[in-house]
Image (cartoon, rainbow, N blue to C red; front, side, top):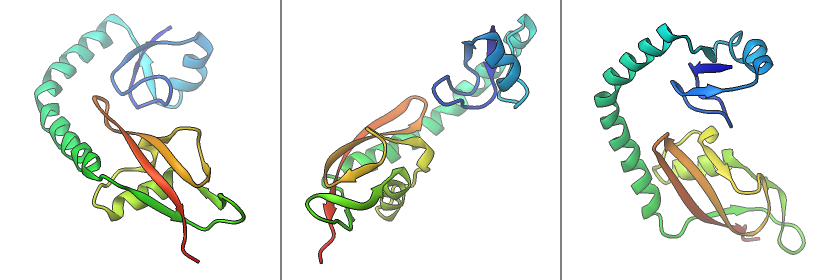
Length: 151
């Protein structure tokens, strides 16, 4: 079943992408929740016209997303402090939300849903990598350190 996405769907695609999914997933989840519509010939024509109109408007959006990504890349050493127990184990964990809050303090504002930390929640000190999506075409890989809080 071919569908046109009306919203970003994680692990499937972005808004206005034409995707192929199993019939049940499309019929029972995506279409009723308003995340997609059937990719009929008329819907495809409307999509093509919308994409043409949006193409030149999107250039400024991509440029601003690239500026945010450049700000992020200019952060040479980025450290997040966390309380630790014995050894290098953390009390709790460092999540996407913690990383988003820390980046916001540094002047890079990004929602936590656009941050993906390799391996999920961080439970030990050390160096980690996160993938941050500013725009569908602007994706940045970011390296940061989790260090123990001074006691």
